[in-house]
Amino acid sequence: MTATATAVSARHARQSESSLTGIRRLTALALRRDRIRLPVWIAALTLTMWYTPAAFELAYPEEADRIARAHLIKTPAGIMFSGPMFGHNETDIGAMFANEVMLSVIIAASILAILTVVRHTRAEEESGAAELVLAAPVGRYARTGAAFLLVAGLNAVLALTMTLATAATGLDPIDSAAVSLGISGVAMVFGGVAAVTAQLWRTARIASGAAMAVLAAAAMVRGVGDVIDHSGSALSWCSPIAWAQQMRAFVELRWWPLAMLVALAGALLVAAAALQRSREYDAGRLPSGGENPDAPRVRGVFGLSLLQQRGQVIGWSVGLFLAGLSFGSLTQSLLDMAEENELVARMLSAQGYDGIYTSMTQFLAAAVTAFVAIAVLRLNADEQSGITEAVLAGSVSRWHWLLSTVAAALVGAFVLLFSAGLGNGLGAGIALGEPETIVRLTVAALAHLPAMAAIAGIAAIAFALRQTWIAWLVVAFVIVSLYFGALLRLPQWLLDLSPVGQTTVPMDTPVTAMTVMVVAAAALTVLGGLAYRRRDAI
Image 1 (cartoon, rainbow, N blue to C red):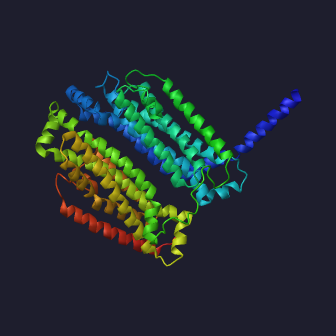
Image 2 (cartoon, one colour):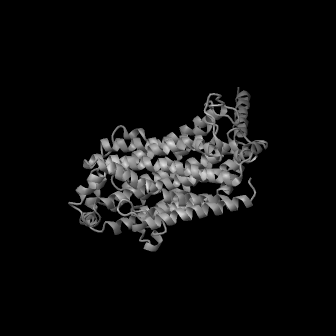
Image 3 (cartoon, rainbow, N blue to C red):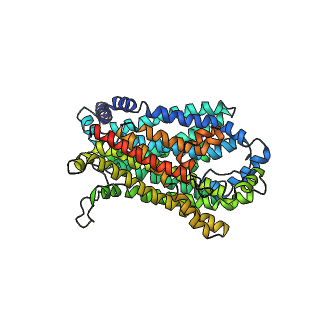
């Protein structure tokens, strides 16, 4: 019996080893590929955690200011975009920090985890790189394991750096660690979600989109659940995001929700391994649509570009409509707050409702800049997947291919801006009882189309130069300057460089600035086309 048991144990050990053969080298390779990308993300998230507590102290120096802020956050829209309120310690800087910052950083870290896992799993199969890897002695689960191991290491580093950064501001180190571990725990869960979706669908775009949809649904469920009960209802607990927030850092700390996050992440990894074991290479567990002879004919390169981004446009439109609806519903709460907050009262006295409408519209438009960059920079993925080679093999010029993609991105931006403006207008119009506000805010959102054209032009030249980081740097600047410009005390000349910040409709109609943006967009697109024609296509 002893000899038999030893033989069985040895066989199981060999099987385990063979299934994970090469995982160390693949992890090192993935780390080398992301040696610039990951440190940038880590630095950005860590700096956010370091600066925000000090920014809160500057923004809310008096107890009355913090009480007014707590009243604003307790509105349905405020809770949707922040976190639960536990009924006490609401004016403490630590509690304010955990309440307002945790959700944003959780979403950012989760997006990073999703993109990283899909990049090193399904995207490699789609591009053919995984086929080269599998030609070497590599175990069945080595690639997925390496991707998850990379995300685990990334989140461990993030938890450490964010804890040190938060504690350095004077906040309690234990509660700071709880916030950071909660953020990393949720990111690990959505890394596991991405590992599962990478097995279900055969394209990286759909796999990452599905994981993002799960993230959006989790955020929505958490928000609705916390609106039902400000301390968290039963519905809130259906979202892993709520588990991290329910650790109640800086209020009444408890650690057991973190164990739930760890258990769920592990279960998702096991599920991903089971799905991978039962599928073929370069196939998904869910059947693809395949050929459809009855489908409408794709007319031209522009039609192909529109078709490629159709799913993203639908998903983004729904999300921005709901975000706009939430923003608009906040209008009446801001007006009520003016009765207690002198700063808000002065702003309304100087700018009227239009100042609030302008800020809300700019916040929504800033999100659309990310879509525009994604839509244009998709050309980079098309080159790697072979779509570009197939398109350019015909009578299509590089200039036509690039211009069609930019035009399709702007069509998508138009749809997204319309959806965001319509939602914002409906929310504000219903809250104030002013139906005409619907049209005003819809038009105000569409007025940001020149700004989107400028972003598309920058993305076009970034693609042509093979320096996609330029486009993402601009998008990051637009978002950071708008959301944190005042808290960071950035100089006005720097804030004026943002095309979204320059668009101040409905408070004002900057015709000159909008004209300059259109001209700049055209010039940048032309320069991008010239640069694209001069370089190798692949």
